[in-house]
Image 1: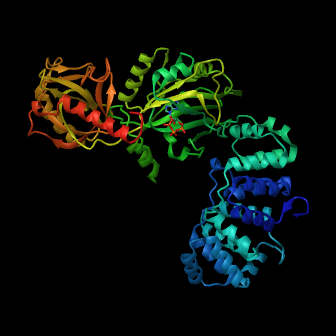
Image 2 (image 1 turned 120 degrees about the horizontal axis):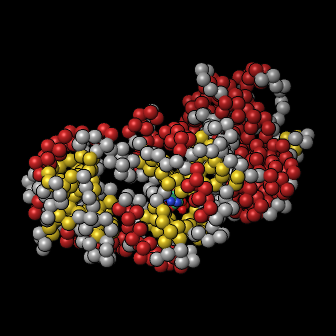
Length: 607
Ligand code: ATP
């Protein structure tokens, strides 16, 4: 079946793919894959695997073909002489580029365009495609860059199509436009490898967690057998599979599960980042899905490089969008906006971020993943010099359910999603790729935007920083309680203000400035400046949450805990038509909270 001893005919791979495509059972799929792998010579097994996965290299290397449909049609037209219009029409009708290619190739004899291309590559006529040849040509397509790259890509692709049999063309066409549609997952490949090479599945999985490159692992196993896997180590520059958390909904259950005590950390609402510093000093940032996202966060790369004093490392944290003027967190969506921007310099300015580190997995030649969490944390503390942009995730050792709840609400009112409760027992290793009970998340599940706006009274302010220096960066706002005739704080709002608003607000508020808290104001927070309750603003938020920091409805739901607005934002409306006593009342806020909770219960969630 193989051509000589070191390649496999591409048609043999294609036949296997056709069978895989036809099956509806995962077990059959794994069997088919396994028999394909068995007959693949070891030195091209990686290429077969990458092809099946629809990629040229593991995702984290970020190798892109850069081939769109149009370019593919041009290559098919060149190779067959079929008019582009005919190809496009057929594609419109079929909706599958592979089937389009197959049919065009079947109905048209291959033409001269292909021949000159063959000469261009110095290839003799009539040779069958091999996996190696297909892969290498695809790799050359990916590497073509700069001026004339499109033409080079078309030429190379034309070469492939002019040599391909119709069935081969089908898979090549699908591959190049990124729609292979096989649905073979990494786990299925691991099953097939285990079956084909009689290597225990756990050993393969361990290797995959440490070095998520199935082509590489397959080649090692195919060439050297199971023992080769022991040579796979955690390597800066190569992402490891992230450790995942289980979830529970009460603090009592969580502590019971973790043996009565836990390291509880703020659960930041941002993007998970695995940050590597390689031997040659390069910083690489990988996402939760192990994609290389360094290009989106050059600032984070710089911040971390500054903050950690070591030659090589792997650390993990959460990148969070920050309001630079108030230091408050911005919603997670802001990171998405940042990533959508093409001009990264502008994006960095518009959507500044901070990083909150929570783990360290490798440092200067030492794999730390098998150390208990406390030791890893110690290491992190040792090497990290926190800065304005790089912080250690806020954490506390907790052994009391009430304290855990309090910390949870603190995290929420600080703009976090909840907390991560982590085991600190002797076996609390960094469990790569596993969702286990060593980490338990305790979070708010719902974030429905409040449907109603609130009219709230400004009772204090915090000085702005950066762009907002000299004005107020955030305002302390309160709801009114007619029963006591007092104002109870419900939020600190720093979003939604334009530059003009900031100027206007200062002018509006300064006449009400007083050196101490107004007696009708009930607050646990200490702003920089206090005001007589006078100015009413319209505010919208994501939801009403429990908070130990605010006094609105203190104790109404839980002892020692009040209500707050999460992600509050000024809508732009100054309610000069309202007196402070006409502001939203604390009872209304309590109702809104209960209503929201009822909806959540109806929606089947843990309130
Ligand atoms: P999962 O990652 O568990 O599959 P998910 O992607 O939906 O689920 P969450 O359910 O929100 O994410 O919970 C886990 C995520 O929380 C982590 O992947 C990480 O991005 C984030 N996170 C924030 N703070 C921490 C922290 N202190 N420790 C660990 N993870 C944290």
